[in-house]
Image 1 (spheres, rainbow, N blue to C red):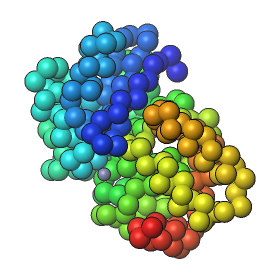
Image 2: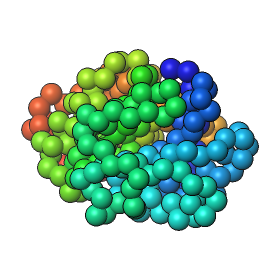
Image 3: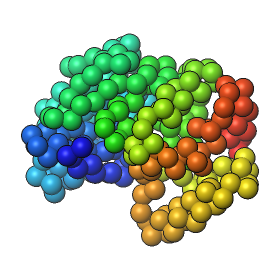
Length: 239
Ligand SMILES: [Zn+2]
């Protein structure tokens, strides 16, 4: 994929992302926790914002939009089924729908669970997961059911293993501590945790992460049944 992707820290522990097609110069933002860091990144790169892709309705993913729209005029893209809770959409999409950011082909995956009608945006080599799949974790199941969230994560698990996972929060170190309680003997997890500690000590984001690494180390993604997933998710809720 001929593109550049920027990870932009926002608020206390959110991430927004800029996806820039090198062929056409088209730029999309994924989620808007706040406007200022996004505007600064656009200015620094000299990019104009063409699209905003929204993963779900929570305030820490959309509240920066009014300030952003005061300075830019992108098309707003989100889940057709959640139009009542999302900012006004220019393009409303459903599961399986295809769309483009310049020459980059995207596809919508319904990853309901954290919220109903939460969507992920999958491109060749990159998926933007919002609060569904995290590095070594997954979002809390607020609106959906445990089987629904398990199914959503399994859809993401089925993407090509060399896909980079761009998730909405820097929760990785806390997730790592919990993951070790589930799989204390997982050698790949032990190695990964050393890397995570090193990155965080240097103030470097642990997002994105490689899907193959999540498949080897993320207990929420590795849960084979909705029942085992539910046990792990419930344990994490009170960790
Ligand atoms: Zn959320």
